[in-house]
Length: 245
Ligand SMILES: [Fe+2]
Image (tube, rainbow, N blue to C red; front, side, top):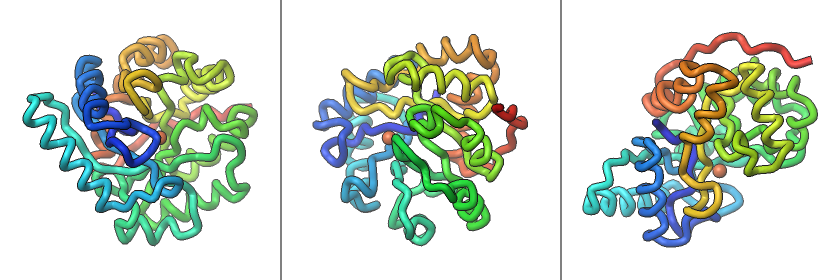
């Protein structure tokens, strides 16, 4: 499996605190069947430059090699909405996923900008495809999945969080994650892991639950071929989602 969203790099955001914890998280991910991880520290709310992220990536990569932990690592970032987003991504001031056209777009936990659907269309026409992270945890989306439908129709991809599917992010997030799956509005399941104790780097349990909602082949795509195609910057095609009422 591939984890597209992970706060494993240590000491640069609210994820892993030490290199030891980063390594433990990689072992935990490996034991769960994860073989590739995109390292996506917060940028915006933490002052992380692309250089800082790349340096920390190289440090972790060399440690995994010494310890013989065969997990492939890729660079990325958990990018916040901001006015100059397109320029910062185009100039690599903000990192996309493995330097591809795809990038993680961190959504606010309450309200999205009213022009979000138009903004996604602008991003897509500039050649940048946002992966909307954990909309199931956003209050507005919890009450109005039509808005998410519009965002997906404008060309965005959607990542839901494994812990949400398991109910570890609250009942509302769980109920919304299940609805997002049922409507075919989710493309990726990722861990958004932050440590060895909370939001851990594990996908398999959530995959089992999601399998009963969308079927085995669909859920496997969400943790294997789709995130791998994103890392490889391949174009993606999806089934038409259902329109929520
Ligand atoms: Fe995140």
